[in-house]
Image 1 (cartoon, rainbow, N blue to C red):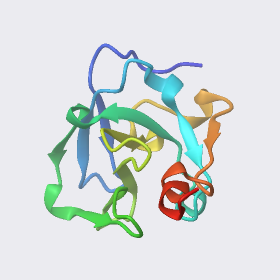
Image 2 (cartoon, rainbow, N blue to C red):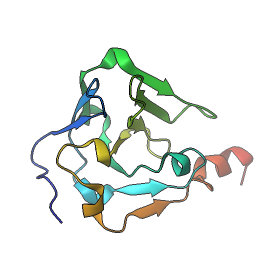
Image 3 (cartoon, rainbow, N blue to C red):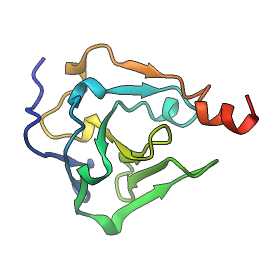
Length: 133
């Protein structure tokens, strides 16, 4: 496995290069990688790593980022409006963090992460709380 060092911000870009982010991961770095099986993430299929809210800065392309949100509107998913690539999202399970698309991080091959843990988005704790369970 050959992953970039964690001691500097990572560069993340969409496919067409219109959106560029500077990303500083949480201290757990690539060990925070996860997939989710909620109705949206299962269709998207991306692996996300965690970054604090102040750890993601849009360097280029703020004007072409498109926001998608639904249901409780807590999770906020950003995409490049030109090429359609998901770059990052504000996490519903922890709104103090972003999930960043690993495949957008320069120098990172998602295959190098090996087996990535799954988050149970189908039975999300926020949904149980709203139902009174």
